[in-house]
Amino acid sequence: MPSPKITVSLTSFNHEKYLAEAIDSVLNQTFAGFELIIWDDASLDGSWQLIQRYADPRIKAFRNDEQRRGGYGINKTISEIARGEYIAIHHSDDVWEPEKLEKQLFFFAHNVAVGAVFTNASLIDHRGLPFRNSRHPYEGLFDQPNRPRHAWLNRFFFQGNALCHPSALVRKKVYSECGSYRLGLGQLGDFDMWIRLCLNHEIHVLPEKLVRFRLLEKERNMSGRRPEARIRLRFEYFKLLQNYRRIGTFEELKSIFPGAEKYDRGKDSDIDFALAMVALEERPFVFTELFGLDLLLELIWDPIRAERIKRFYGFDYKSIIRLTGEHDVFPRKRISSLSRWVGKLKAMSAK
Image (cartoon, rainbow, N blue to C red):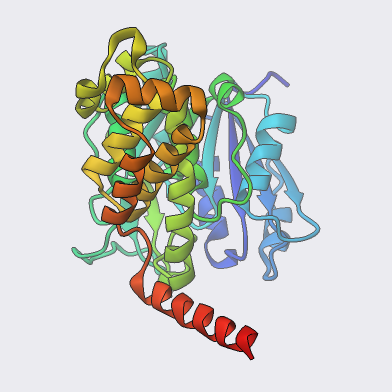
């Protein structure tokens, strides 16, 4: 059997109700030269039994002995199983339009410098009907203009993700260069990958809605607006900003963040210092400010860099003390609770 052009990685967890439609939307693609790797994450419903009923020779199915989350299956597929030149990501509750893979491959064939091709997506509800809620954050989110990778990196830093994961078709060699999906990220594993990808590769979004992205009831999507998901998202976003420290030159930094221009000191420029100051000056999110403060303190604690920053930017330890008093990065309610706890602890120790 000849090697497939595309490896489709479909992760499955407790989506028996939607899984057949997701699988069939792959098998019915107008481009047929693919292998479909289905990785079930120890589903508790009838998903695994449904998967085993498929006899298409292009399907290989695996099942975790315990729940490990989707990134585990995608990583195993890419690193150990995939034979395709391209990797397509699919989810067990979403649906592909028949010409998705064909149209993405056509674009790749005429744009050899592009590392990944995404598509726009239509939103559907749990019944498969068009999702109607103009105030929902996903409404229009994937309808993005195409932009150079530096502009994407700027958008990611200041506004967040806007790429539809189950629309992605990525060159396998790009995944090899970027590394695997990082386990431990429950909300933003794909976003972390897109930042790392755009640090070295251009991407493109086809304007056609070639994916039907399903929004489940009661925010049951992994990216749903549940309280624990919102809390986790802020922490993960803060950690993902560390990716920007991989920017290699000050010229590239300025291409991503034009506001860094004023911190250009030629050969004496400090990329991390300029990045931190941009984060503090633009302050799109509280965790972006925290990232800037944390980075500045790290620089000040390095004697060699601290001396250079003071010489070329007039910034020293007194400057960071001033800034930490201006940027309120922690919820005051939690601070008040902590203060009461410390007071009680002191009172107890004094007895």
